Image 1 (cartoon, helix red, strand yellow):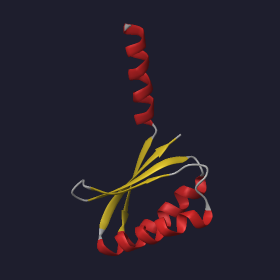
Image 2 (tube, helix red, strand yellow):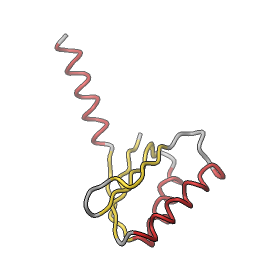
Image 3 (cartoon, helix red, strand yellow):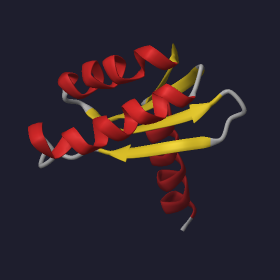
Image 4 (cartoon, one colour):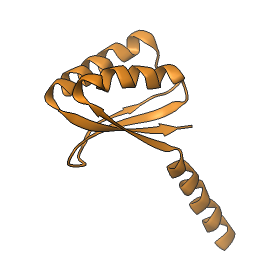
Length: 93
């Protein structure tokens, strides 16, 4: 049993190590998210404000492409107009 627990913990640690953070200003949020999506190895994007509150989580899969992202990017653009600075957390595969 201890071996299974250790394996689960190491898998969780690996998932956490695949995170990156980018601090961007409001007007650059949509541009940065488009860049990240084009990279193709992003699993989830989380946008948080300066206080650390989560403003938006965007799960990405292989099925999400092109026009399916248009409403999401529009929502990100509207959100970006309301915030001065934010942090984008990226979970990679």
